[in-house]
Structure formats: C-alpha cells, structure tokens
Image: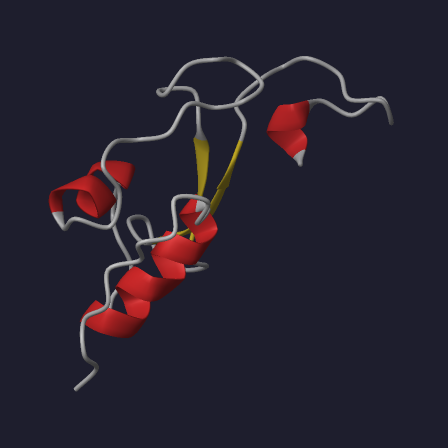
Length: 88
C-alpha cells in the first residue's frame, strides 16, 4: 500500500497531480473535482490560454470513459505552429 503524499509544490501541474493520485489510490480521478475533493489541489486551476477554469479538455484512459490521464487547453485559438490549442 502506498503512503499517501499530497504534493505541496505549488508549481505541481495537473498531470503530476493525476499521477500522484493514481500512485496513492490505485485508480485515476474521474474528474478534476476529484483532485480537489481528495486534497490534491486547492481548486481547479485556470486554463492559461482561456483564463477560465472550466475549459479544460480531459484525455481519458484508452478504453475508459471515466479515468483521466491528462488534460489540455480547450481554447480554439491558434498556436504559433498553426494548430489550435485544443488539439495539443
């Protein structure tokens, strides 16, 4: 059994928190709210591209409709390379 370790690094990114949640609990969060409720994050962070906390696009575990493995901005703005941020 893993010892729960809540990251105290204020610069820990959401992907790091998702990994730590998985290590500690043996399953991935089903929502970003799960990270907040379990104490891994104080609040859902703001998407740096949109300036909102509700525009994140979550990537689910292959074959799962619920488990989050990563996330990216939900912005439809174009990056320097011409792709939109929601496609990264």
